[in-house]
Length: 528
Image (cartoon, rainbow, N blue to C red; front, side, top):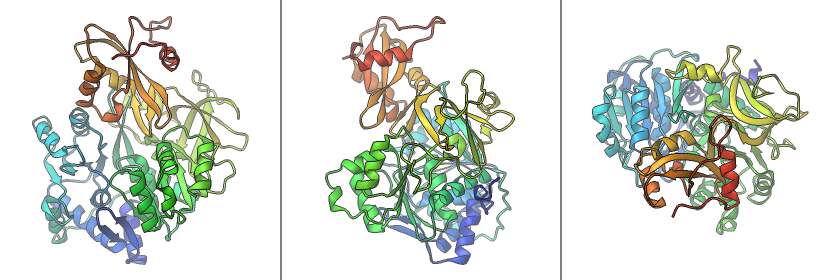
């Protein structure tokens, strides 16, 4: 393996401990909107105390610890504590509603849950309370307070600081995280990632981007996303940089944070870049500290990226490609790569990419579109409790079938072809699987059949649409409300159409491509 693709650390906590020894007063975390900052020494001490507190509470290495919260200073502290204690972190999407949350907690068998009681309109504590009777494995629920020293979280920290427990030795090959990503069956699948996979991938990303100790790296991506808790956070820590966090993305607040914190690196998805670029207040903010940016999560328009690089300005902006199953990135250009807008660059150090025929998996030559396959340091260990699903995408040689279509240029750079073999919609960087939304809609008494498909959206890239065969009269707003109570809001269809029959293939499957074409031609009758 290329040395640059192999992290020098066994765990991300080991990286913090190393930085705390070398540069104890260097900034590690800044959450300006929360009013919280940590040096590397403070972060090491907080994380090790929390790790001891968790083990003293009866948890054991290998146990799973879920985390449901907006991005705040406690988030990376919990992540690091789990790494130090040999526990498996289970980040949960803050868009989850009760049904999503219950499934993830039951399926993961999480023994502990850290959470924000309320964030915006989400009352997470109430959701968990309504589920407790159906979560036999869950023994500890630890809510965050207004201040990190408050409440049960503060008490757990204090307990750990008073403890004399020795933390266990944790090896890089052990599972460190279980990250849920939706599946084509309509149920989320949990990708198991080792310390070595996450650290190797984020180390390779940070090396390729040229991140160093003087950098301040911020992102609009929530920490529950692999790009947040792996690429950005673990990349910054391993390189001794400072991670600058925001609780949620707001374009003007983001510009204020970049200006005031003098952020030098920004990671986001196309919708965020469009929002920043077109914001009326942008000329009033000094964004000149930015030198590097990454854009991923959905197909990125090269012209938009070039305009961002020129006008924000963000000279080292690059297009990147990856997924949860690859510990975030497969490929990434260097900030001075002349093809960094049109392609997602060459594979990272320690990673390989190839293009194969979707039917035969025969390797295709440069310039020919096929399925993107990836192999290397960042590939998941498998899907949790699902060997069949694992075998369907990950072969004995370590090649992962991504389900995405792309090509390799003659110079070895990966270029996405704009299509996905899987039945998936990417809405502003959030993955939406049609089967999951269809499963919810079919539970409504008025719905006989449902076919969910993507339509183009100028802001989000893609939006969720559905064609419905109904058995009774129902309003579009009523169906949207029905879905909104059961699944994350970003999964709820924004365009609803009614049909008497679906276009079918010879084998009887719904031709969703035909539905999409009809919708874009205004040939489908909308549901009022």
